[in-house]
Amino acid sequence: MNSSLNVIDVSRVTPSASSESLTLPLTYFDIFWYKFHPVERVIFYQVTDATRPFFDSVIVPNLKSSLSSSLSHYLPLAGNLVWDSLDQKPNIVYSPNDAVSFTVAESNADVSRLAGNKPFPTAELHPLVPELQVTDDSASAVSFQVTLFPNQGFCIGVTAHHAILDGKTATMFLKFWADTCKRQQDQTTNASPPQDLLPIYDRTVIKNPNNIEAKILNEWYSLLEMFSGGKEPDNPKSLKLIPSPEISLDVVRFTLDLTREDIQTLRERLKRESSASPSPKELRLSTFVVTYSYALTCLIRARGGEPSRPIGYGFAVDCRGLLDPPAPSSYFGNCVSATFKMPLTAETFMGEEGFLAAASSVSDSVEELDETIALKLPDILASFPILPPGSQLVSVAGSTRFGVYGLDFGWGRPERVLVVSIDQGEAISMAEGRDGNGGVEIGFSLKKHEMEALIDLLKIDHFSF
Image 1 (cartoon, rainbow, N blue to C red):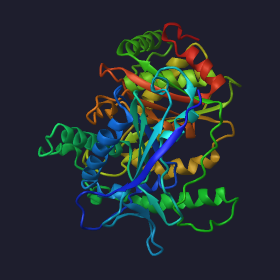
Image 2: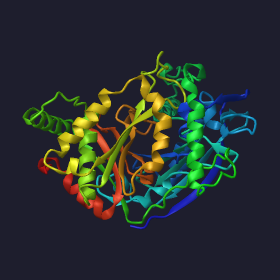
Image 3: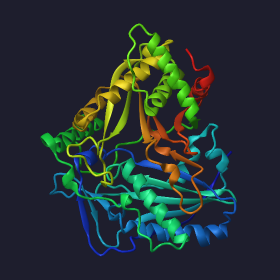
């Protein structure tokens, strides 16, 4: 189905109360992300009486005024990333009258299709996420778009610069905004905002061990030289992002909803296979390990190809609790590293014990996590140029711990939350199940023929090789 988008308005939303400037230096966690593609999310809400007059007079004004109020507690989001010629690294700078971009639009797309559990062309999501303003000299922190689907509902599109906030901080802000908007409609705005959603900006909680900031910047410089064909970058301090791959028109989206019972079935299977193997070992069969290993195995099988082809996997790790001393849970910014395992080969995951092999490897990766994971960021950047051609490197966006289905702005829980930016690479997205009963949602973005093979493999009742 061809859908069209009509942009109704593009405006600037300023924090409701802000008279002082604010500058936050990037930490090494932030610098790692400063050239990467922004994170894009779309949050769908089902509101069947969402007519254009109701949208214009109730939904949009409430969202804008509560956003303005929320930004006064999250001033850096209204600011910009800048890199002064005299500074060694970029800073986030907020000045009075800075603002976020807020687009209002209308679409004739079918929400039940976009928020459903059948495949659809990923290109249909792209008009629903706003552009992020990025130039050589400056980059916006976030931008927002609210799109009406008449008599179906609306969605909130969020595009966020990864150098300014990680998934935990982004979700924390969205929860703050949703809470403010709901209290505004319930006329309980005098109540204090939840203390656990108030950001902590203290940058001294993130040290710079072994001058890791300089190491990450040096790795980025080497990458930029490679992207320039071996030449010295024209502007080493440019904030422009590295080029994004062109998204093929035959790429489709699919969301798998795993129930708690599905996950337990997979867990029991792994226990049986592990105990029956020649060298049984106790696996860490957390919900993450089970579901990620399951998705990883199916993705590798769906791709097919030569058994010897190179495979890798990775996932982000929240370092707040791993640092010594730990960073506060509500620390604002990035505090994530990642663990990667490569190179592996496809044949490891293609045989009868492929699922067990994946779970064993992912379980080991989780068990090995400690405070040293934060120090591996320079090595991760250094490994990008040496990935073997044709590698399938599966990573994860999102988390089952973020609680995105609690984002009630006053019109109920989301119908579906999608991470649009997984289109940019071999990533899947993960979130807690909508019903809150211990399930997991996994989002996939693949070429149509691969997706058809994947969906067939994902049927748990005959998941066997």
